[in-house]
Image 1 (tube, one colour):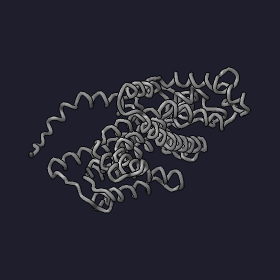
Image 2 (image 1 turned 120 degrees about the vertical axis):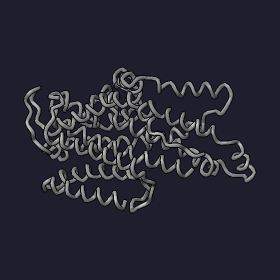
Image 3 (image 1 turned 180 degrees about the vertical axis):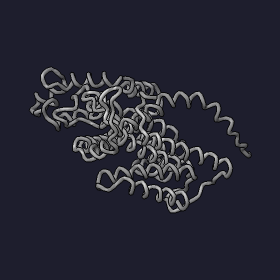
Image 4 (image 1 turned 30 degrees about the vertical axis):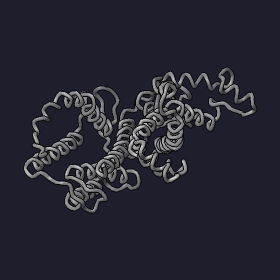
Length: 90
Length: 288
């Protein structure tokens, strides 16, 4: 796997994404979800909310890099909170 | 009818998934890995964290080409969508002329990008090209190789020439799908031709136009070959769009790390736009 130039950080990143997808799949099989309308303007399924959450988290990180000198750990914490809020009430 | 969910069908998708894994997922993972490292050669790489992202997000080079890219894509849409609708409205609906005009309109779509670039590069030359020479002959100072405004004009004109047909053909098929009864009702009400367009044709074209806007936005957002052949990104950097700026960095200067960070930012923008369009199309389907 040397040609892919793995680092610990990116390996962790992809593992976490993989684990999230796996958990969501298992959860979906155990408890199938239905479309619902939360605070987002459209009605969404659980998977939609996960996707929106991950994509917006990426943008949160980019905004932190572009406009501040703050640590990315803060961005990460914010993203996790945002993802949880979105999955629960979005 | 009650649908029985059978998730075993997903196994049939497995071969495609494996193919996509090798053509898309593995390369993108590699790009993510590159984007956090400073790569010198096969065995020498230093971990730099988010440094390349910070640098790219603040580099005027990326921001300028991003701005240029957006203004290019929006100009393309602003010109091609109304023009395509107009062309579709003017095309004959039936008879031999309908087939002839369909074929004529479809011809530019069959020409490969690099050929289109070469055609326009020759066509617009101020010394020997018919278009460029004629403009100069009637007293308009035109030279796309030295004037940024002229270069922009030529790149836009080339795209309009190449792709308006796509919108026209999509709208043409949309127009043919409107039942005759709508027009009869409009005639009984003595509706003006503008009213017919505004209240019958345009609403019925909405779904094909969403597809058309999506296709044209995506294609113009990743444009590379045509401006590369026509202007090479110049004069200066005036027609260097995102993909070309990226290629210069990755292959020209071999800055793998920054180029990887740049392409992931590019990817995130494309992903967001795609998701917005996907949502709009889904909402339309639900409304039906």
